[in-house]
Amino acid sequence: MRIAINTRFLLKNKMEGFGWFTFETVKRIVESHPEHEFIFFFDRAYDPKFIFSDNVKPVVLNPPARHPILFKIWFNYSVKRALKKYKIDLFFSPDGFLSLTTEVPQVGVIHDINFEHFPEDLPKAPRNYLKKYFPLFAKKAAHLITVSEFSKQDIAKTYNVPTDKITVAHNGGSDAFKPVNEVVKSKIEKEYTNNKPYFIFVGALHPRKNLGRLLAAFDRFKKETNSENQLLIVGESLWKNEGFAEKLDQIEHKDAIHFSGHVDLDTLTKLMASARALTFVSYFEGFGIPLVEAMKAGTPILSGNKTSLPEVTGDAGILVDPFSITSIYEGLVEIETNEELRKKLVQKGLERGQLFNWDFTAEKIWKVLDAELKKR
Image 1 (cartoon, rainbow, N blue to C red):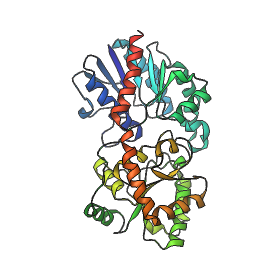
Image 2 (image 1 turned 135 degrees about the vertical axis):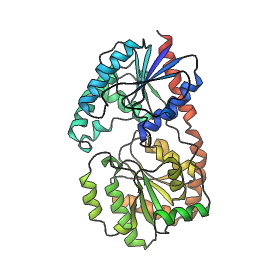
Image 3 (image 1 turned 60 degrees about the horizontal axis):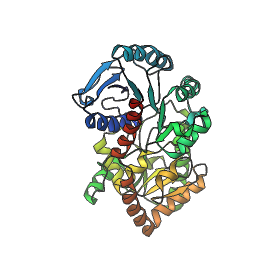
Image 4 (image 1 turned 45 degrees about the vertical axis):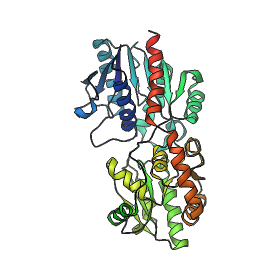
């Protein structure tokens, strides 16, 4: 059988959420199933390292799809033609975008539909595209995959999709994340936070990540505890976020806040494992991979208590109300000052982190793909 896969987020040195999900799952799938041929659809020149095995054929389809107008052209014309040209039996799209003009069966991964609940967090053009087309993608798909039970129920309810059409395949976490010794921690602190301990945030600087309230809570934490702790923010802005810049200007302890920008995986593992705690207080997440990375790294977690985050965090973190600066502040104080609790969270995290494995994710996805292939 010939399976085409949307691999447009496999980007050298620019891997974010969709890219890592695609990399970790697709690599395992193609290597484990040499009996099938896989056609990778890129939208620009690709790095050869993403051609994971001999049963992969890379194809570049124009135009590069990074704008709503180009999305429509790429998926409805370029992908449609390629599906026909290469006689594809099934199309798999790890970012959820599908072709509405082909009759080839398709499986899409819809990670979350935050834009349905907080549309104001996105610029107008992508927001309008997502709200118009994702309900159509959900109906068009032969089957859907999502990354949490929360997202499954949300998609089913919002788009009136039967729950038996949606399979949950939890995200994994790289085994590169693991505890580090004090020597490594000291080197990291010296390089990134002026030789001081730090809380860490990892993710795109998107409004739903709730950085404004995190900054305000951290500022209060600094004022009222006299702690040396810094806040290290790892990630880049997904959209132009002028509101975040304004909130940063209002912070008294700006000198205790550090930005690393995007970092490579090896650096990220050390940054995560060297932190006093991960502060991940988003108000909407389909999953939250940094939570799993923190667990594997032996780093305590301060998490929001909304959407999928309690499902992922379990008993490995402190849950706070992301809409309450006071709740976040109190969580920061608790996770910093209660050493016995910290030790418990580290141990529970190391245990719970084993539940989230990319091998499990890839196997669940393959079962869905295989079931669709067998229907043909």
